[in-house]
Figure 1 (cartoon, rainbow, N blue to C red):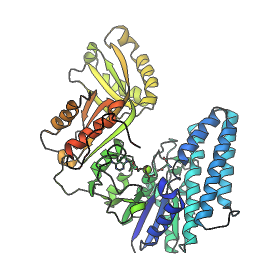
Figure 2 (tube, protein in one colour):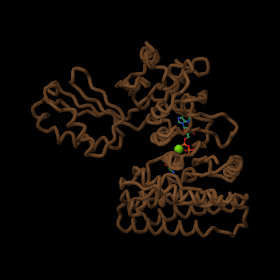
Figure 3 (cartoon, protein in one colour):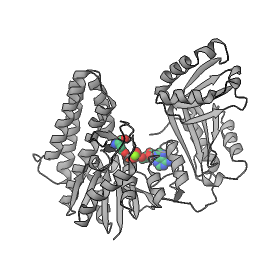
Figure 4 (cartoon, rainbow, N blue to C red):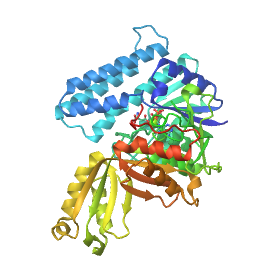
Length: 476
Ligand code: ADP
Ligand code: ASP
Ligand code: MG
């Protein structure tokens, strides 16, 4: 019998109409089915805001926010199970009470640790798994909510935990296997996991895709279907380039590059567990289920394109360590990256001039001040001797990446990319090309982000693309 993992994102579980579509998609799939759900759209953000408010001492405001979420969830539940107004789901009430209690303790301490935050965020996915399972049951599908805290074993890097694969795979088979054999449809929470000691963790923003791929790998599923609100991975973010087209096929490598550089449609780590086992991942639209979507496979069949998609990521900063004396200091770059690691700052892009007079690194804007201070402390002697002139910061910055397997070995791609930017007088702050040669990425001021994406998209998809608007503003 075939096994299919179906993941439904935030908008696909947020309204009665969406859940109706979800139910008909699930009913149309033969064989064993495992559902993975995200929190309803906006819930995780609301919970983060509530956790921050409680941490700042406003426990009342935070509790009120959870009560609002609880009312929304109750209403959704009533609509999808077609219940009378006064029917409430006990599971949902219990979840909300627990979350409010957590927020009260955070409020008392006036400190929200990453660990407490993860416990608070779990509410979102736990609530939607209750609702979706109830909706499916009301339509005759024997669905059961399952908390991934009992399946996905992770390390204790709260907020961005990494799964321990062998233990997770073993638990997935022991928890889900018997359910599937009994003809049940597990509705598993995406995004969350737990340490070996059972403390709740989260796998990073947008990581429900990752949960789906992990479970698909654990169960040796035949397919992993990621249902979202667009008809696949597109040649650019449709909010920036409204004429962007869905891509029928992508290689794992292309998909990984695109998601790494901001294509929110798929979580960057999500393809890995599937690639290892050759499980095809398909991105499909809950609201247009018959659209072909995008299939992500080991090796994409060449389609003659050079740049397949252009993607971008804002909210970043460019930090430059600069000085003529740097070239003489052995292990200099290593020292810089040791400091970055010690500060727990993730680096998105690196470029070093061949003169060795500067190292540029791109990091999230909200971590750059902390990193700059740490680097200045680490380099105090070099700065005093003017071996290092300065640690400079530019922000806000965006990284734009042009991605495509067809770029490999095709001469003149960089010239076209930078020619297109030059014609629009978009200033490029730093450049990097991955050694895999399937992406060219560069930094621009965040104000130029949308214009730069449109310029590249126009250059490589000119028959279908629109001309960049004069304002370059992001349409959302
Ligand atoms: P879900 O909640 O279903 O996981 P997300 O909001 O995380 O959905 O991801 C889907 C969104 O990703 C789309 O609505 C779209 O705005 C955005 N997106 C960004 N880049 C791309 C791209 N290249 N192709 C498709 N969607 C993209
Ligand atoms: N709910 C989580 C988030 O908003 C995970 C997900 O949606 O994939 O980040
Ligand atoms: Mg997502």
